[in-house]
Image (cartoon, rainbow, N blue to C red; front, side, top):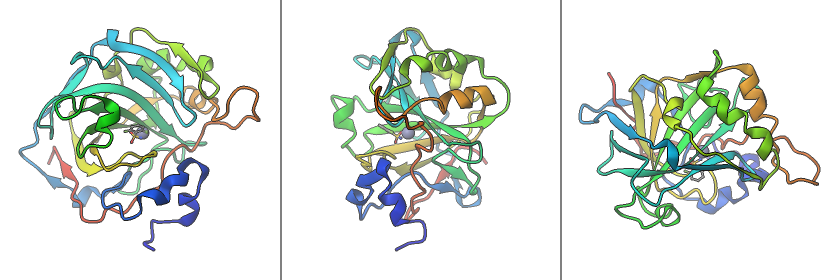
Length: 260
Ligand SMILES: NS(=O)(=O)c1c(F)cccc1F
Ligand SMILES: [Zn+2]
C-alpha cells in the first residue's frame, strides 16, 4: 500500500467508508508542494458575489458545524478563476484539530494549519440540485481557506457566538444575515486541482480552489470550535476535534497556481 495510506485511518470511525472509494485516482485532501505547482496564466481572478440574506441557519451535523444557504436562485455565486460557468453557494463548514499543531485537511509543503474553512458550491448549469451535483464530474467547487492563530477575527466572532446553540449533534439555530466573504483573505492568489469530497461519499466531483494566504483567528475562537460535540444530547460526550481526513496520494495530478 502506498505510504500515505494507513489502514487505521481508513477504519477511523469518521471515515469508515474510506475503503469504499478504493481505486480513487483524484482523492482529497493533498499536500500542495509549492515548487511542483504550475503557474497557469489563463487562470482568471476568482469573482465572488455572496448575498448575506441567503444565509439560513447553522447546524451540527455530527462531524462539523455547517452554515447553510438558500441556493434556490443565483444569488450567492462564484465565477471566473478556473471555472467555465457560475456555481451557487450551498454551505460552508470547517475542519480543525484538538490542538493548534494540526487540524487542516490540505497542507502546503507539509505545513499544517490549525483549521481549514470549506465553502461548498454546486454547478446549476449541469445539475438541478446540490445532491445531484455531488455525483457529477466537476459538479462542485470548494474554496479552501486556511486558518492560522493570530489576531481576533471580528467577522468570525458572530459565528462563534452562535456555537453554544449547536453544541450537540443534530441541533440547529437560525442564522439570518451573514456574508461569508468576510472570511476570505484579501490576497487573490490560489492553487487549484481536481479532487474529491473529504467526507463520505468521497465522490470525485470537486474542483478545489485553495487560497494561498490564511486568515487569522485567535485562541479563544479556535477553542470555541473545540467545545462542540460529535455526540447527541444525552449520549456520553465526545468533543468535536480532529474532524479532518488524512492526506491522499497525488497520483497523476498537477496543481496549478494563479500566481508566479
Ligand atoms: N469537506 S468537503 O468540503 O469536501 C464537503 C463536505 F465535508 C460535505 C459535503 C460537501 C463537501 F464538499
Ligand atoms: Zn470540508
